Image 1 (cartoon, rainbow, N blue to C red):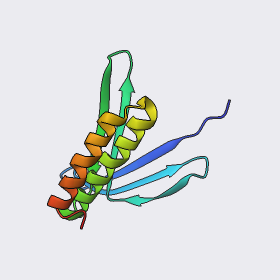
Image 2: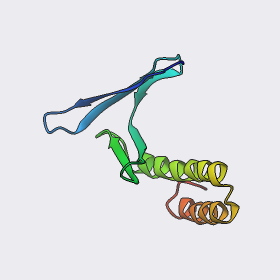
Image 3: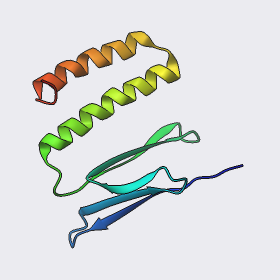
Image 4: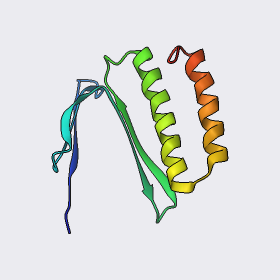
Length: 107
């Protein structure tokens, strides 16, 4: 059985705020620096989602709006692939297309 590691390195400032975020994947999937990350894990024992949301001090509000919008849209794609529930996926996509236009993420 093959295994792969995905690692995150968070550099904090004196106030423990993220100053730098780096990631790498052991199977050659890539590596680099980023300004924000969202990691969600499903804890089946607790029947609950565990999350880590981090962003650096220099990430702008406009970048965060775009990051958030793109995450919702791709999560909706994942939801559709996992459930086949086109009704809900279409509603979420339609709603977030409107939100993207309202907050300037989409033109």
